[in-house]
Length: 149
Image (cartoon, rainbow, N blue to C red; front, side, top):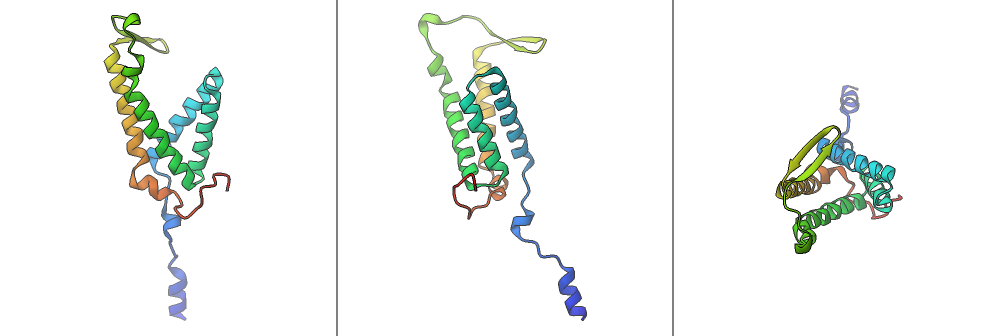
């Protein structure tokens, strides 16, 4: 009888129950939700904001498609942010001087290269989070790519 009690007393833990949503992924998802909701409120890029919210739902639902979308999203964003100086370069319309940044009541003046460096660093952080081992462990790898499943 003691053998049966000892076997019942030890809980069976599977890798599925041990996987937890990583804190860095939670922070990234909150950033995505805040950006999408503010875009929806401002009526700027509504379709893009809705697709980002669907990606967040797929990630929270542990769908493999959510991982693929997250990685693709971050890589495309890093490529676009890295190409911003080339895209925005217009010799006829160059503004000499710093760019004014408004954050609530605070107003700051920064050169363009500082703003671009900050954007590239933020994009690199997103790529680091998307390709992290703990983030990959959160998803169910044997699920199909149907995000509505």
